Length: 401
Image 1 (cartoon, one colour):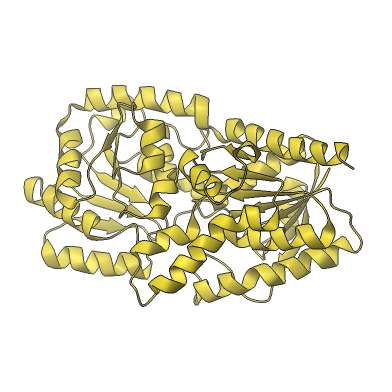
Image 2 (cartoon, helix red, strand yellow; image 1 turned 60 degrees about the vertical axis):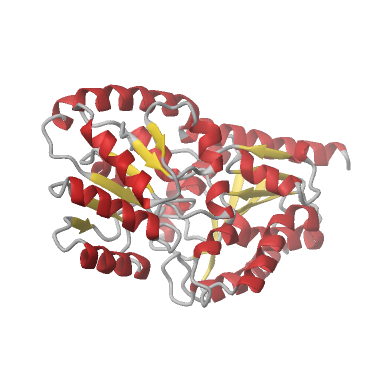
């Protein structure tokens, strides 16, 4: 097949989160002999990437696109329409068999292209994007405007007649079904990790290090709110020697959070690494004792199959998370994961409980968890299921024409 692969994020190198999945999906498509045309924002060294991944590149160059770009939300709103034009121009000389979109932003373009090109469309929803914005300040996400965006995002598969939908969680699938889209055309695939990158540190080294609490990711407003702030205070008052390590871009939300945390706990040991490439994140996690996911409650976080949890477990770290619905449905019986409440007090106490455990116990539980996620959530497992579904959509289209 000839695939038009659409994303709003630069393809390579992946910056973590949802962007990492695109690389492994493309590799699986190419491994099966499909011709992949990648439509995405420009990135460095495109010729090298084209040769490495054996793809055709159609790069968006009108403005810079990334999760850290200025005026990001306005650019996200305009991007789908320009992305659509980019694909339409390419379609004048190249006939595509399937359009596969990543995330809700590119799904807008994919839905409109279904009508214009008459080809089957598969939409891959790696999160409920606008649902995360429920915890943003009202001046950044006015509530009436946000509710309309949420309704639009969830209704896109039905509105555009998508031939199939991949979702990151069962919870997100339930939301889409409630809009009237058929459940049998949805395939929850969850979210994976690269087990070759995210592996446990040796037991000999973990027992000799000082305890460290780690968090990594994109550090948006919903990641760092009152829950995280309260939890740091609880841990710092009980164990002032324990440092906190924040691995990722120093966003405005993180800088503001650090300022507030140090104002409340002046002696707090808090290290921010700045941006770390995806393939180097695991080395930072291996320094740690417990990983945290202190997300504020929203529809978005309940739908998220949080990459942090999977990658923490992959490196053998026990995890403390707020009780996100999708995560509890999958990891509810995982001994290495503790679900605290949506409050800083219970979250901080859960972190302290893990810090109080003997290193041998944490290593044993963490190692067992890493083996489970490796068998179920390695990218090779996830992408095989995803591309099986995309191929099924194309086969059904051929039978019906």
